[in-house]
Length: 355
Image 1 (cartoon, helix red, strand yellow):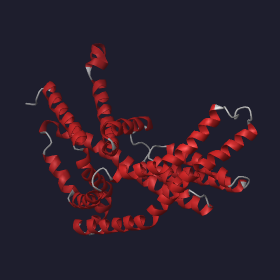
Image 2: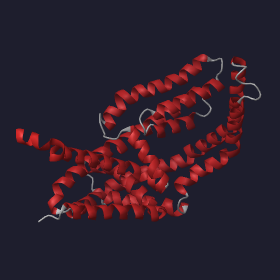
Image 3: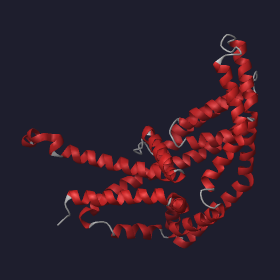
Image 4: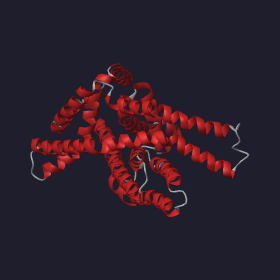
């Protein structure tokens, strides 16, 4: 005999509250394990594909780990120092960029940009603030992801956790499946499958799209000669995680920098704009349909809200779990709505008699 619905709700509510409390109280401690688990989840399909080619799970996991380690080392030696240098230069160049913008606005709109104009004072203040706080902001951004716990512990624990979780992923899923309540096993499996499909389509698919587009934008802008092409490409690639936002922000930022750098050389400015136009064509016609799919069940507004809410309450750890929890809540809400539409509260007694 199944437990009463009221009692089940109490049990699941207590479990959810305990999870949120642990997330809040032990956020710094569990961060490496969350990151390692996310990496293992992301790479599990690759390991499964290698197993289909005849490799053992141990050998597949070892090969993946070595390849990822090689990529990380190359990024640490080549990309990251260049990225930090360009970001620092961008902060240093901010006052001059805003000064050039002031000159342009004064020439075109002299009445709007007099000495007492709030717009002019705001531009001066923004430029000076970016230069004064740029290094501090950069240090905050770098330390927020790695310095939550001791950097050495983080960098050691994450690869180890990712390796063992990737190695034992299928066994862990089987163990969890064994612990499912017998009366609700089919429903939970169905919901878990939908959640996994949503996450696979969004995190794996959209994450791969971000990586490809960010690399494309960075290389293309650097080939054109844009001074801060690597930074702009990284920003556009990261923000592509939220549909349309990456292209809009990256395009506006790159075109603004191109106007400052290539003023008068309109073909170069057009070339910068074409980079993002080509990127959008590739994303909309090739990458998103192939890697993400037509529907993943995560609306951009819901995604932004989840990132903002969990990031505010739980910090960087909240940002990591925001998308999985948002996907889970979305699937559960759709399930509840489907149950509601099949019940008497929605259909009423009159429709039941007609049936």
